[in-house]
Amino acid sequence: PWICPAKCLYIASGPRRTPAADHEQHTSADAATGLTQLSNETTMAKDRIYALPQHRVGEFAFDEDVARVFPDMISRSVPGYASILSMIEQLAARYVQPETNVYDLGCSLGAATKLIRGQTPSNCTLHAVDNSAAMIERLKGEIPSWPSDASACAIETHLADIRDFPLQRASLVVLNFTLQFLPPGERTEMLGR
Image (cartoon, rainbow, N blue to C red; front, side, top):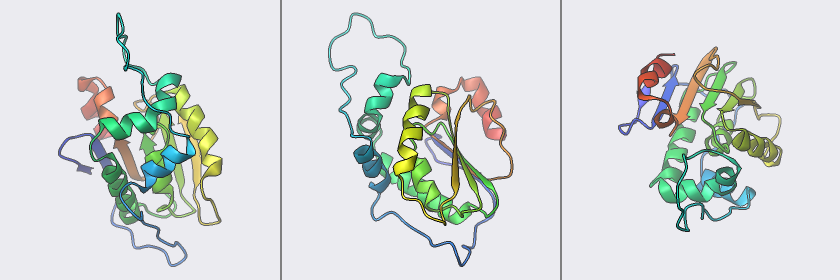
């Protein structure tokens, strides 16, 4: 397993992969490719959720309002986010094994999912899991517009709590800025799975 120093990105993976001859490797033209593509495809709306004074700010939720502005929100609030996406793509290229499952837990709108797919053999299944119905519904609407050919792996979207979601035959498990939303006492157990 690999954990970045900030403990915001956790990747559990198997041995390094030697790419199959029939699986063409794609890499990002630049660190911002995945986020830029996601932003453009979802007609990026500006995040103005907290722009006006509010009498009371409620608990943050990944609802439809957040899903609508998420690409703008995440790119402005997480320094280096595009570079992190690029790093996830590179790790997928190195560690995803044929005939395995790949998991993007807490996938949101699928920026990492999309980049992982480009590095995943066609005989794998990529599971995009999130507990936000708004995020999953928007992701389902975007996937058909992603480039797809015979070498593209299947993507399954799941509206589920990652703590209860079964992980089987995984060669790569990504939790990108996901652990922070779990109660502290449940994080170690999640990583141990």
